[in-house]
Length: 369
Image (cartoon, rainbow, N blue to C red; front, side, top):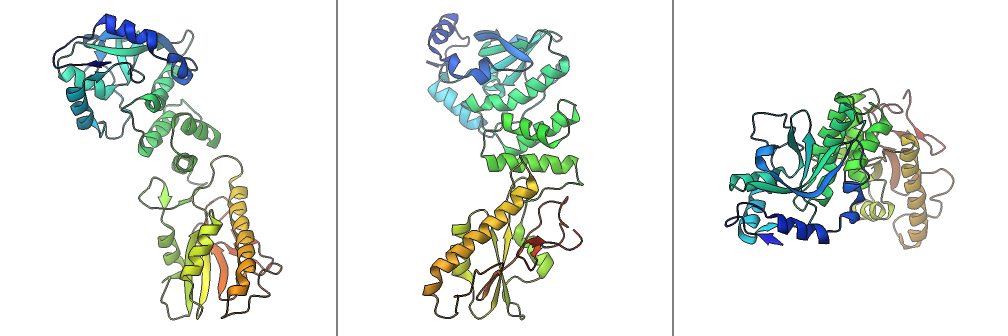
């Protein structure tokens, strides 16, 4: 159902009643049933804007869920509402929370749509309303409103999560005592609201943990422009100097250990048979659950096993070097290619200013770490 707000300045109760009969609320238990701290008051109702605290109100305690404070798609959404009408019943409605203290509704989601409607002199707002659960403390309610301000965006047709918004929310949860400052609590808070890939979630978890526990840093290696990442090339250059074209006959090949087939092909494409080719691995973003050191080592040793298998398989095709003995025992020298070292990732186990190398048994080793 589309409502032309250029002609109609109040939503009608008959339209709300029609949508309530057909909208599949039961498809979204995480939004309407399985909630902590708050519960649904009305699945779909009309609330006058005079009873809603909006961002430009001076009263109330507006707490934006976006770092920027504004939806980057605001203009696009406004054009859509003006030209195509307000979409009623085509997605989960905005969410408001009734504050007994303020005797008004606070916005959980729907800042953008509410702002557009009110700026066009629309008088009321079709929303789902929530209230505090019986017996819930103020702390539990505040935590829930902050958390659901992020997680409800999954079902918001105009919602778009940003990594920085998740990072900020979890940091806020720690600062305000809503969750404990420990790895498991941070992990659960991120995973309960973030709908991005597990790799992105783990990167956010590690970033928050690093901020609050600088003695146990977990490094995520990758694109330096992404949240929590460090650029592996920059680190390696600081440690060994020039990566390619030096006068010492050494060429460094830096790749991720997480995708052995792709890394193997990339190494063979770039290696120089006239020089010593030192392969340095990094572990990308480590999983934020389980044993971090174990995950780090499994990535590295798994890569070595795969690389050895690929080299043995393809050795008959190499003409410039004899590979008949490569891959035997703990030897990590494959003709002109050496599996040389790994970037550090865990300050609890590594000196994060130096490379992690291998001992004579082919095991990860870092002296005095």
